[in-house]
Amino acid sequence: MGRFGHKLKSSSPCSATKLVILMSIAGLLGAALIADFLYASSSSFSSSSSSAYLSVASNWAREKSGIILIPSEDRTDKASKKQGVVEDKKESFLSATFADLPAPDLQWEEMPPAPVPRLDGAAVQIKNLLYVFAGYGSIDYVHSHVDVFNFTNNKWGERFDMPKEMGHSHLGVATDGRYIYVVSGQFGPQCRGPTSRTFVLDTETKKWKTMPPLPFPRYAPATQLWRGRLHVMGGSQENRHTPGLEHWSIAVKDGRALEKQWRNEIPIPRGGPHRACVVVNDRLFVIGGQEGDFMAKPGSPIFKCSRRHEVVYGDVYMLDEEMRWKVVTPMPKPNSHIEFAWVIVNNSIIVTGGTTEKHPVTKRMILVGEIFQFHLDSLRWSVIGKLPYRVKTTLAGFWDGYLYFTSGQRDRGPDNPQPKKVIGEMWRTKLTL
Ligand SMILES: *[C@@H]1O[C@H](CO)[C@@H](O)[C@H](O)[C@H]1NC(C)=O
Ligand SMILES: *[C@@H]1O[C@H](CO)[C@@H](O)[C@H](O)[C@H]1NC(C)=O
Image 1 (cartoon, rainbow, N blue to C red):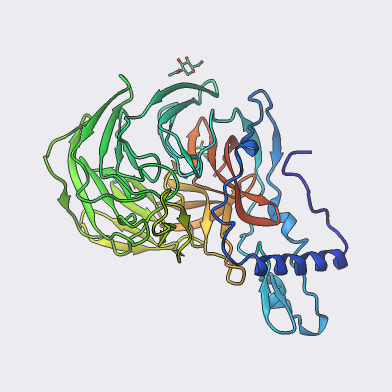
Image 2 (image 1 turned 120 degrees about the vertical axis):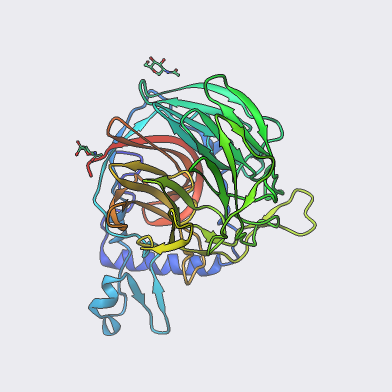
């Protein structure tokens, strides 16, 4: 039995009903919003040994049928049952897993885990190598190095340092196939301030150089190379919460800025961090994301993170040669924390996992476990499969027919989509589109 196997066997309707009620009560009591930005203690960061290759089917969506129940017969109807609505005498409750979309199961194979667990890390694939940058190891510790995974021998190999002055999470990252541009981001653990510093890595020499700093620092701005310019837009402003709408670009070539300053470009219709930004077929897409984020607690000497209102969205914006933003079909559900969770395969963009809107009753965070496909010819979305679990800020790659993901923060189990453990695990599945 895989580690994500059936925790919740299809139990009798009676015990399942109790479970729903218990979960609802627990959810309401816990509404003090303490646990959502929860990092497991370092002891639970244990990663399985790299020799433990494991094959499991992703089965979490099947589990949820066990807890979507209608306790009071007289008030049920088929429609509410279908939507996972649990009705009560006084008010309606939605099951904790109501946000999961139906999706085909995929066969997943566990690969060697990354040397360290990472939340809010960054990644770029160049040919058969996945460069994995920075990220929180725990809420009080951030990484300042790069780990490299080799898709040819399926091993983690090289590790090298980032510049000391570079941000440690919420970076904007893009590559031209040799040079990797790293823009702005948060400097330090907890909810510390951002830096506007910008760097470029030559992956052949492993040498870093500086670039002109961004006009203002940003958290997790949408970043991509397009038509010879490095574009940076959206993200959160200096207070970590207020969405930035600004859009800047600078001409770059072979790892060097050709201009002294960033130039203003057409602002993005909606700002905010944690969006996927993809250039494909000479068009630039900005996908999903959120407005608002955790902020440092005022006066806290350690910049302790405290939760603030945030809205997740599934909007998709496109820039083409007209340089006007066009709104295209939104994602099947709101989705954020996907900035490095995408790959381009066969004229489509594949997006893995994320976070969706909070639970409307318990206000808990809800992770996403589906794999979405955006078809570049029709500009439409479909749901093509499930990950082994729900997970956000995952780092995706594609090689030799396999979709890979590693790192991020996963759910509490098949029946609980709230974030818990920060992981370094790596998984792959054979993709057939
Ligand atoms: C990746 O693995 C292949 C196969 O073992 C090897 O030939 C290649 O040198 C490796 N690349 C790097 C950068 O380590
Ligand atoms: C992409 O398209 C090619 C050619 O049609 C096909 O052989 C391949 O299997 C497709 N890849 C995936 C992942 O479906």
